[in-house]
Image 1 (cartoon, protein in one colour):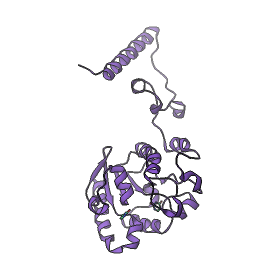
Image 2 (image 1 turned 180 degrees about the vertical axis):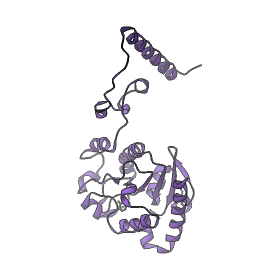
Image 3 (image 1 turned 135 degrees about the horizontal axis):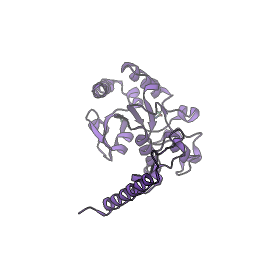
Image 4 (image 1 turned 45 degrees about the horizontal axis):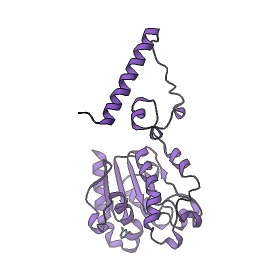
Length: 240
Ligand code: URA
Ligand code: URA
């Protein structure tokens, strides 16, 4: 037995086939899709699954998601931040880094990882033979917590849907979760980062490598060796 949703999709397809056959009888030989204005198509995510299966629609872009966030006030951090830090880099990146949240420099500049931790991340990328423009970098929460305190559960909950949509839009081959908050949020797993790191996991069918946060490594440089082991695994997986 087909479930209800599958039946509905079959039904919608049959209707589409019937409509196309009818047009053929009028003498329609080709359909002219407006492919030069794809932004005019409705967003697939705005349609119900049955309609989306049979309608020309487009998946959302990072710009759509940024526009949807707007001057976000979905959690209390909206009142204390200078500016929202959405993320940056290559929207088609095969490798995405997810950090925790903006610090002071990021809050001032509107870009992720531009402070001390960002300089270490740049060196890590350099050692991997990559540049910032090759990868995409974002955070679990998009607004700086006062005094850089840890994000609260309700702040993560308000922001996480946007992270998920960013990762859907980019659809990278590999994700690196930098530190405890990124790893625990993406994996929904409260295991300490020292136990999670170095082992491949999966996030919505994307390979995910949890590793230490660069800010933690600045305070505990002896663990840089472990980060580098994790990045070597990432490089191997990207080369496959
Ligand atoms: N730390 C983070 O987690 N993210 C940034 O963007 C900067 C520092
Ligand atoms: N705590 C974190 O939040 N991240 C680390 O990488 C290590 C400890």
